Length: 466
Image (cartoon, rainbow, N blue to C red; front, side, top):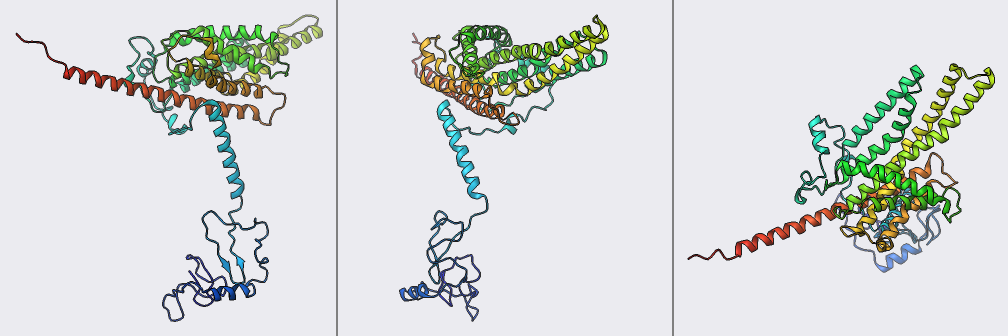
């Protein structure tokens, strides 16, 4: 579109010519002005003419702060009279936001490449947890938990392959937290030391058990019973803790606390492999659940140990010694004061470890075991499986995340824990999506096999008649 007075090129949405200020769209007579494209002579005259704006930059130069020749993708180059190019000024901050988006997408792509997963499709946290507060009776909860046996495992064609909608985990968390808070209240009111062990164990086990319940619900084939989960929780935790205790002194790494990453993640994965050798559990979702179970047991027992050795005893012993030194003997009042101070110190550790629990051991081992089950499936265990590239690349993620978690340099506001937790869960959801697709592919194969059998039976010759 061109101005009917000066012939300057204008955009269709412009109401006034940027060169001469004439109203566009209508001529003096009120009729629409359809100006043809300017001739070469007109272009030469326009280029030779002085700039319409005295403060405009020299010909061929962009406005201050703009790169030379800046135009948005697909925009046609246009000229003001006098040879001044048209420049488009983007929205403030748009370039920075674009760079941030590209950086995030690049990071996600690298993580998916390392984990051998695809981008999440149809995933929404709001939809996933949409049934958390839905009311259900006791019968619904009991039936929900009666799974995993030969009689209660649903047939493959009835298994849900969409994103699960877990809800039981929240009830488990609420029940354990309520019991934990009740014990703290009783202790604060009465000072009875009998409440201390319950506070310690409920505080250490509440969040890991609730997170484990979440993974139990993500196992959509519903072929793992609570009995199996409980056995693996105890045995896996003891085996993994024992292996970590014996392996750590032999570790060749000398990188401060960061050596816990390769040592503990290896110990937990080997515990899963040693305890769960049954080829009946072939789904990748099974492996994710088994890893989460061992990780939850490891996290719960480790937190209880930290609460005892790093908080309760260091707070109790000095208080008891101080009471003895002041009074010559330990009085009940001094004992109660020392116990109270130790419990307060222990509560701080339990609170922090509880908040961080879903981001650490449970998710790390779920990731590692899920990646291993992607290789193992229904085959007997073989050491060669641990050398598979798909497993090794994915296993490097929890090892590195664990090392960054324990690194001597820490970002403010628990930044290390939040960052590593988000990356870990992003990969976990990618593995869950792969597991759901595995179930869907088996459903498809089962349906095709059923159709073949039905067609074969329909075309089979009937029994011979006399």
